[in-house]
Image (cartoon, rainbow, N blue to C red; front, side):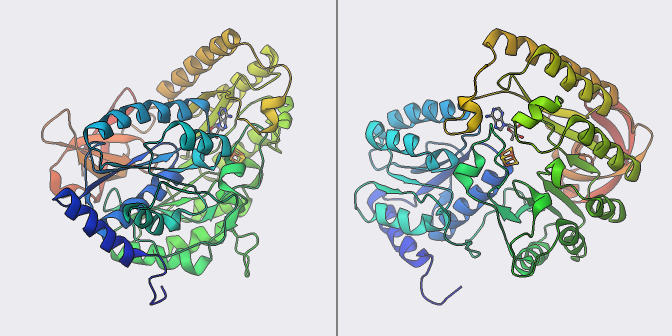
Length: 462
Ligand code: 5AD
Ligand code: SF4
């Protein structure tokens, strides 16, 4: 970082101290996150900035400063924000010095930001996804007593590397590898609110991973809207498979995961990289969205049913014990009963370990929102229930297939329900409970999986 106060951290520290003096105590802050892993990682940066500036972390929204990192991928995410705002407003009436900041994807929607500006006067600060690194400067401006601060950019200007970060857990971290998305799936708002795809430089990613490893991190989650297209447009282009290998080679890193894979860009080189690197977790999240080739075309997904099935077969042939999970949207415009049956067919054939199922939600500005033949609510609800039933039935049948095996688990914490037991996560993302104490937290241990209970195992450390 340049010696000048480029990020405005010094200025933020001074303004935080002054704010604390007005309150008569050290100010507290709480960052609330909606949405995906990408937002979760952004929130670690927001909290990192706040702690470095002198705030203390608060457990809930009674904090002096509340930052809400919003999501807008489906309408219910937007509704959730407005629910929170009502509550925050009544808290601010009791505590007029309280500060409320909003950021994230929903603020990138001009209509929503405008609504906040005109109808929610108690909101102090609004910024977006492209200018997250301006947070220290903008918060300092607000605390310095200027008016409300609204700064929104419609496109990104730079990838800024050096924001402080506060990890949620000491032993695991997300690492951004790319930002934005170029795919323009016709239902999806992400390309509009996160911008075009930009990859971080390989050196910067590896530097961050090395620093994390030095700081005690053993599990890395590589994050991008479409990790499989990583590296395009870089000065020296690199493939995702190559990046994955290099991340695996970092000493101290024991597990590597990644999110999200677009089926159209998943290369054989990547399948080989997964197969040949023990550190890569045996779990692949591979959004299907629909099993109907006709709907996939309307979704602009650029693969068809047969292509998806063939891909999962190639993956399973190379890595037989991999766990496949997916995202499915029900009720995309024009979806007929036959189209929906195709989705059920893919679910039956691939036998996902689990699936996130969503009811199609029209997003203003996306092509699908303007398509004719929006499917009636009752029909969507009925299909959604059938899909959920099938997904759960197959998930239940598949769970337990590793009973009897000894597998490594990363211990995440004490088992809240049973004293004397800890909870660990297997490479395939399934949980196992076994006898142990707090000293195991953050370690990877071999566990004998003795029985399955619903979707988790009971085991014993070997
Ligand atoms: N409606 C419903 N689900 C959506 N998703 C993205 N956009 C929409 C939408 N408009 C789902 C997709 C994606 C996941 C993150 O959210 O399944 O993979
Ligand atoms: Fe949205 Fe498609 Fe990009 Fe995923 S790949 S973020 S669904 S546009």
